[in-house]
Image 1 (cartoon, rainbow, N blue to C red):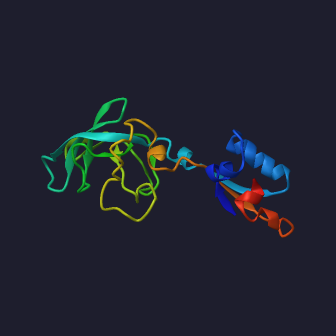
Image 2 (tube, helix red, strand yellow; image 1 turned 180 degrees about the horizontal axis):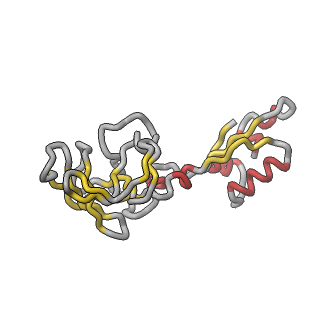
Image 3 (spheres, one colour; image 1 turned 90 degrees about the vertical axis):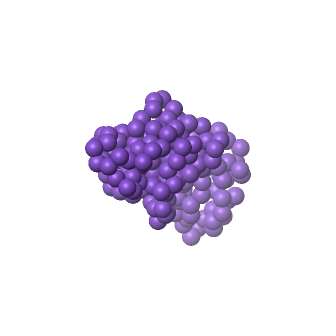
Length: 176
């Protein structure tokens, strides 16, 4: 059975960490199969805003964007059709691993223009097969904040194996 930490805390008044909860579940006889925290997997990615977006001088389908990452302004070459000034999206800095593309970003020249990171689509984050453009975040998303929070993916998921002798634990209420 899988449940999120927030869901468990709706039924259990605790401030315990996910690690403490997993250890306690194991101690009472439940087998914790996995604890997955998407916020850890998405740690390198930040909310960024496109400050300026211009046509690439050497390519018809590319744009050169100036991006505010919260700590610095960087130039990013982008091929997404929805890239535009004012868009808030998910930014991957140089050195981060992009799971949907299976690559670690490096500073690169794309058609003669330097690119210092990447604005990501849902497919590049393995959130869906959608690859028609950059993820568009709400206008209220704070620049520089973790992308996992802006995407609502900052809640740990705990998976436990329920043994036949513990039918009381087939719901989150029983686990709590």
